[in-house]
Amino acid sequence: MEKTSFKTVVFITGAFVSHHGWDNWKVYFERKGYRVVLPSWPGKDASASELRNETESKIASVRLKEVIEHYINIVQELPEKPILVGHSLGGLITQILLERGFASAGIAIDSVAPQGVIPTQLSFYKSTWKALGFLTSTRKPYLMSFEDWQYAFTNGMSLDEQRAAYDAFTIPESKLALRDGLTSIAKVDFNKTRGPLLLIAGEVDHTIPPSLNMANYNRYKHNASITDFKLFEGRNHFILGQAGWEEVADYALNWIETVYEAVPEEFENSHS
Image (cartoon, rainbow, N blue to C red):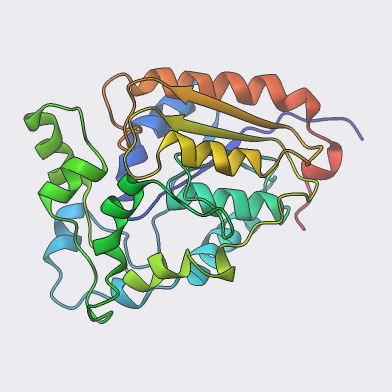
């Protein structure tokens, strides 16, 4: 079978933010010749302002399994196995779908760690504890306050940049979906043969600190499949929209081109 160039990329959004956070990346990848698919999570196909103003949001009832199945259905409709590029909880979904054989390659940016990789970093818990909402009702979604956004996503940026990003992208989130990230739904077989995987970390990320990214990466040390790691200095959890995001996008694009020749045929065109 002759190898064919895979040129379809699916961006997978994380929690708390609109999928429109990938808009600049979508244009950037399309200009490089890629076909880009940019879906929202279930119940989130609207602008950030519209979702924040909904009086009866269905977001609160969304579960992580539903989100995973949502992306699987999208991927299975594509003509080829895509490259998945996910951020935060979307990075975890990228790892899960890649391990299950639904992608030719994956890039997980500041990825939520799969089950079994235990966070020990204080900043992780400070960033996520309110969102998990263990002492609150799950009937209402969680909307991150601007103060929490400053710490969890946009630390190190100017106040004007932080406010603009918050207004443009912050949306309500399902506490149930976040809690599911602590269960077996978030399990990954670290030893299973799969397509290439790149883990990207931001040096000053409070939500997914670089040491947590590295702990995730280290769990793959016995896997013979390609697994790479890249740390970007000065990058926070808003890495997709932080000034100079093109540097991260360029690295991702170059990595895709570099690993393509190493992708076994069984990971390319047919879906599992």
